[in-house]
Image (tube, rainbow, N blue to C red; front, side):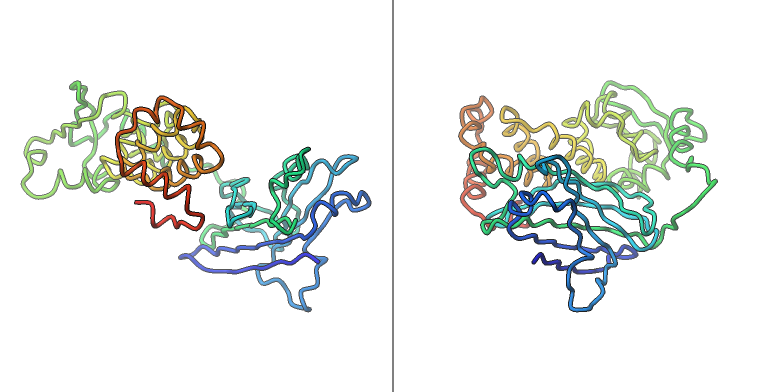
Length: 340
């Protein structure tokens, strides 16, 4: 009998529903070709309604149930973000999909992700996605925003970010000049810069040189500075996948936390055996804790022997970083807070 555990908590105006669905003897379930779907609303919850109200469903496709599609259903229309994680052995987890906030219709099954039988049980008998007892455990997290109304219609897309970016491009009503390392000048606005970065805000407080001259000298090269300014004005980073290393350094310098997170995500997507040590050093240099944790997890996940033969490993000089790698690999229950 499968089980479903759930918790609900509030973060501001966001309700976070966490559901952990455990399906025992999952391989036997896949081998039963008469079963085409498996749903949580068929479970016996002791005559109690699921407080979250969200139902889950596995749908099996193919002659040998080779494909497993995962769906969820909300009883009401909501605006939510959905995250699916597979719980593995040794208390590890693997993120399968993260879908950003979207409007979801009520009482309609929503596709979330696809799993494949080959990933659950390979030819050599290894149960990649299964727990030691052979069960499949899926962790769902649904973040429901209560301050955003759904089912809006005939409302134009917001132009705010475009209008602000246009102010940057035209220099309309600018009251300060920002210079790149090469001397390129950009007409900008004190109020916008100060509202987005505490570092830039400090330039315009008290009797600073910037207050007297209305000129801010930046150490960033023009190619990077213009992307930082575009982010400050529009909250968008169109080139984050092209120059994530340089933008990460800039985001750290100006304390732009969201840009920093976007850079960490871009660098995580590009992780390979050859560049993981350089990426780890970059994360350590700029206090990118999330990226540092992800690179350590990449190293720990069966790649350590290959990584020690790379050029990046041969050039590593920080004893502290080597110690951190060793401790992370050797410790199963290390907490994210321990990664400094």
